[in-house]
Length: 265
Image 1 (cartoon, helix red, strand yellow):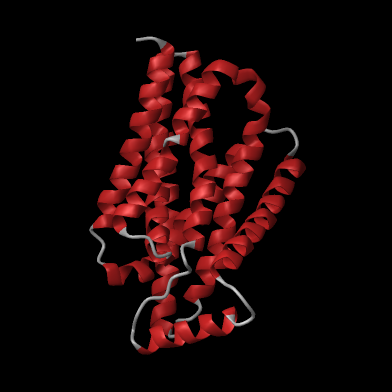
Image 2 (spheres, rainbow, N blue to C red):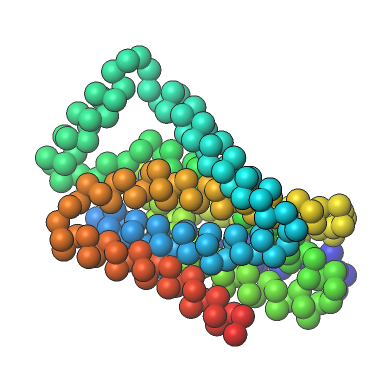
């Protein structure tokens, strides 16, 4: 098979398999449990950022300061993007009051609040960048040899599953329906194909940009975790809830770490 066909096939199937595997785990989750499992999503995303994405970015660059600057810039960028989404959904001076009334009403009726899909939109942007880089890595490996490309594609699929589970949970928590979450995650995975194509045609000129693309992907996950998800966890102050949340965050981090050890070990 021609190298380009191997790249296209591996990128497409890799994205499809990782999203489908994550969907099978998440789709069977009962709706009322989604808000509790957001803690796992926080751990999975932060684990992916600090155990995989940023270390990989630092290995590929000679300028760590510039890479960390891109992370800071990305966090500010996603803050501004979220503000734009807020302005789109909120008009006038009474938005904050309206949100408080909605939240109070939901709490009284034991309903789950969501954020008008803001955190879901943010995480999809970051996922596009991350999947794009995955495609570049797969394409680069196939340019060396077919066997290396296959091994790299399998490793990336294994790495992606815990993160994709976290993405699904965030989309559901953000207000997306299960079918919508699957479709949007699947569409985001197709940026892997674009990354593979660009790697095949203009690999050398792109290599210097990979650390910065990874840094942007990391910044979106950091921002969504810290700004959108963790504040929601603080609304439950009971000791039992806190222990449950910390346990799930640790499990999220551990799932990324264990997957990494299995793939690389």
